[in-house]
Length: 265
Image (cartoon, rainbow, N blue to C red; front, side, top):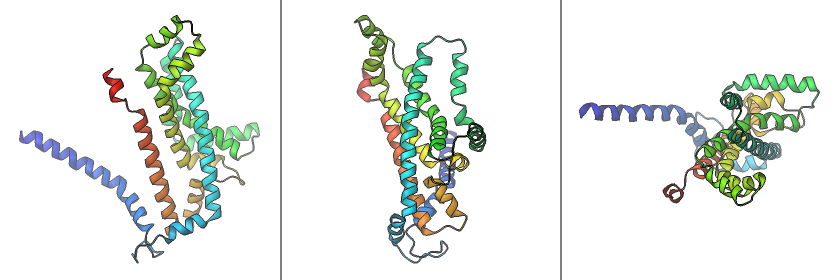
């Protein structure tokens, strides 16, 4: 019994240390976004002035709009492509389908700096101007696996009898997909799109390689400002980004979780 309690306590301590190491720097940045002093080493009192100045910065707001637009476009495109790819592999009996599924997840496992260099060389060879178009293609490419994996996992848990019943009642394959398969996989699709939006919104490394002069995203804007020093306004922006990403992640988990009633049925 003592060994069991010792293992449990050790696991709690280990997890606690990991969480402290991960989130203590983030907590430090968030706390100093409310610091009245410009110096992070000195606490001069609580204030919200840095958030007010942040929303008065036109260049920062423009970069925010660009990131929101890019995230929305890439997540929608990734949702369509990832859903079709997952359904295609689930329906078709292809030799080496497992290898194709593995290849589809390479953008997640590959280092971002390698992907950024690949996109840079590719766009330079085809002569595509750097800007919104190159960012859209790059962000869509590394966002597709998130939707693909979520939809693939959802399809693996669905029985084929629903779609077969629709086909027996006279529905075509396309109508059975839109009336049966798509509504049942909609939570997984939406969850994958939220994850894709969060990853697109937070991306820095790939965006640095493929962005243009006339189009700047918010993470790249923050990265360029860090070279001249961290200001409380930057801390405020990082705090807002952290909370936004956290909300999107929790929403994705909540949407993708199985409903209690459906699980019982």
